[in-house]
Length: 116
Image (cartoon, rainbow, N blue to C red; front, side, top):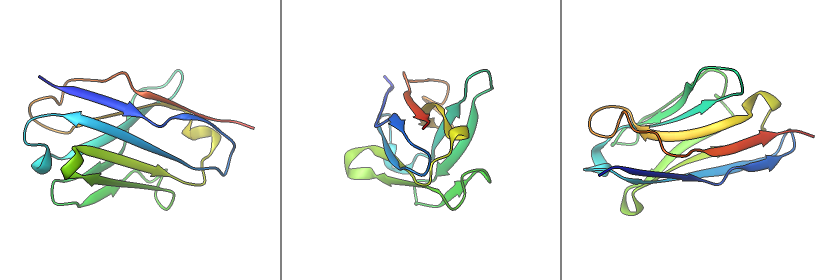
């Protein structure tokens, strides 16, 4: 059974920071590649950051230099540190495995709103 619980969103002013957490109940979490996605109002969901089981990361061009993805395998948790937030970062943020069991499951997400 897959369970993904995102948290840490909120309302922040431009230039501010947030740290999102994703508590993931998925099989073999420590070796699973995980991703953070976001869906802005009226737009398709997009992949913004990925991390492999070994800790290799990749970021979308739009967030490079501002966002950092990390994981704590002991806690089955993936994080997204977001700095220098911009209004265009507004959206609902989700995490999930990139491949395999659970990769077609979406949690409830966490809302991030960047506004002055």
